[in-house]
Length: 402
Image 1 (cartoon, rainbow, N blue to C red):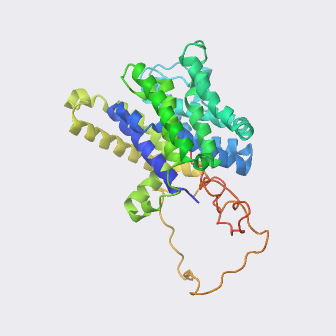
Image 2 (cartoon, rainbow, N blue to C red):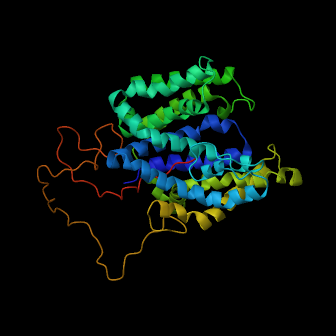
Image 3 (cartoon, rainbow, N blue to C red):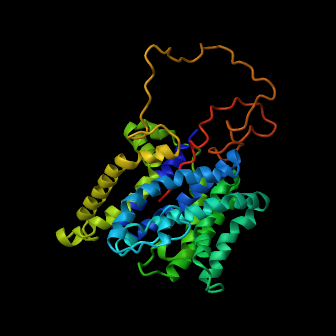
């Protein structure tokens, strides 16, 4: 079953990313470090997929990730080639971006968000080994990326390659997703979690204040501060967040919006930046500066509207990649076939069918304090539990992008 709280976090992260790219407000990166949150959610889902499928989960995740990128490339790569991009073998990186794919002068900005897919690809490929290490030595494995980043940012390893910096910056969040899936974050006592989060936030905040970037206190320019601040944020929102968010269903419109954004997260992420870049000249034409709240609001609405149009046009590719039934707008309720008998609860007072000994299957109930989104058997020593109906293998393995 889906965890709607995690869906809500992904929804908020995607919306925040789009609004940030339109407005440029650095404060948004501090209030909600969306990129690290999305890597943490992706890490949690990747751990679940590896538990279900083993190394085959890597292939499945790539299958979900790449088709939407190929659709984007089919539009923009020919346009860049016609406007000056040299045709070299590196263009093939648009098919499998293990390194930064080439772009021309305008494509480099409009398609700048591709870095996320590059990092995501690295992390997916590294996950089988990382999960093996994490299970055997959780704390050292979890601390390793932060130690790596500290060595780079302090100058101890000033010549580190870019891939090392990216692993130091965001792989820690990915590993916190492993910890979330394993139930470690929820099992942490408040006397441990709260001081740890406070210490990380204080260290991250101190680094941010003393190492401002070219855009001030924008976390995207302050790597070590970003990693520490985001780790504190993730500990709180995943370690002490609710087990679910059923209240979302009280509003049909909001419930549908959360579903649509989650099912189309990759399409929204990939396509929003070209529209942000395309609308930027309007600042000069009509005077919609970053200091004009009305102008900014109009630009945000226009970007979301244009992203909505392109999502209607090509978003179904995400359904095909996930082996779901393609939908124009995700989240529609399937109608009950005519003549089908309605389901009804058992009569009051009816005895429940006994569960045979040994019939319990992991996946229905997490242990106390465990991760409600992952597959767990009943708590040790507790009664057998009837397993909840399981979703298809990839149903909860959405690609998180932001």
